[in-house]
Image (cartoon, rainbow, N blue to C red; front, side, top):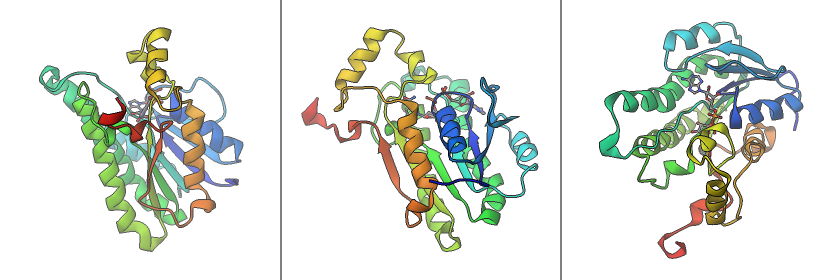
Length: 238
Ligand SMILES: NC(=O)c1ccc[n+]([C@@H]2O[C@H](COP(=O)([O-])OP(=O)(O)OC[C@H]3O[C@@H](n4cnc5c(N)ncnc54)[C@H](O)[C@@H]3O)[C@@H](O)[C@H]2O)c1
């Protein structure tokens, strides 16, 4: 795959999956820009401090670009709270980040993506299609990202702009380690997976770069699980 001279913007690129996506695009020759609240820990991509909950910060950062070839919406937060435990503030935090943040970045980046006839890849979650009882707000935001992807894919297809969504299963990142805090918990979770392992950030990055590449030129509105088969589980396999 070849991304030389391509401008790639990754929200949430300072950590975990987003960081692996940046490394992968950089390896293929792209010029990578990270929009994140957390500074980069490595050199390579260029960093813009952006809180995607703030439309003015998004506008200021995107004002520096002439065109965007690939936009990856990866920034996200996770809260494990049952519906009756979730405060209004927690609900605002997760909806403003995951759903409204993704929406506002796309809204403001679209003129730049149009200029490059580029492509958009959103990072949802397996929990956007399969319910986790202890995280209804997260599940709802991730389901919203899937529908947003479908709407935009259909709207923009005739302009040659492709929009796809990736649904990671459990991936070993700081976000996952916040809820599975011990190695025993990680192992127990891995044992539930059909492939008997937790995913690595590169597993997701490989699919994202494929979707952004010319090899996927007839692929839009696609929903791609990267989860070792977790989404195939049913009542009967439990
Ligand atoms: N790790 C998993 O198991 C898993 C599974 C399914 C989906 N996902 C999704 O993958 C994406 C990346 O998750 P990760 O596991 O790499 O988590 P992570 O916590 O390692 O990285 C998330 C990044 O998003 C950034 N971010 C958070 N809020 C932001 C905001 N308001 N503005 C800008 N940046 C912000 C963080 O600073 C961080 O750099 C998320 O959308 C997450 O929901 C992760």
